[in-house]
Image 1 (cartoon, rainbow, N blue to C red):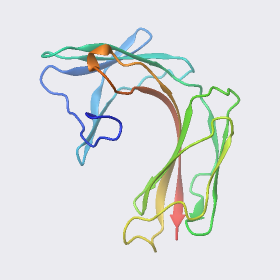
Image 2 (tube, rainbow, N blue to C red):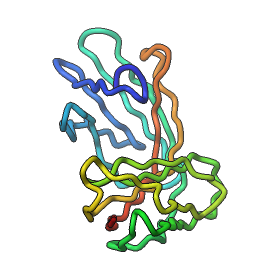
Image 3 (tube, helix red, strand yellow):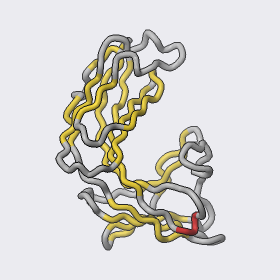
Length: 189
């Protein structure tokens, strides 16, 4: 994104521009994974997901300066225990307890989010020492005119670690390595 972490300006590669990700000795060109409502991102998949795995992303440009040295290491893995898949919760009446097993005490950021068709995006930064977080009844808000609707929502728990971006990007910018666990649940009035 251009303009920082909260910007809604997504850039699309063109011409001779490309992104390449490298894990160990394996390199893959990142391909356009999404273009929905001008939200664009690029991805490449690797089998390696162990803690401290180094990832490098190179931005190669045919015009202007390239930025070949952005790096990050993956944070430690964790297991999401609760809520269970397809569990149903009332937005008005039920707390949602999120539980994960984590014995690393890594100190990396933990971020909880819930999103779906009938609700507004809910996001919360978590206490990384704990293995439990609670979304209190009433904290998840509905989208406009969706108050009476029940829908499937995706709960995502993410552990992320900041990396370093190539100096060619200039001032600012962020680059994260993440371990992500998701579960689909139902959100009812």
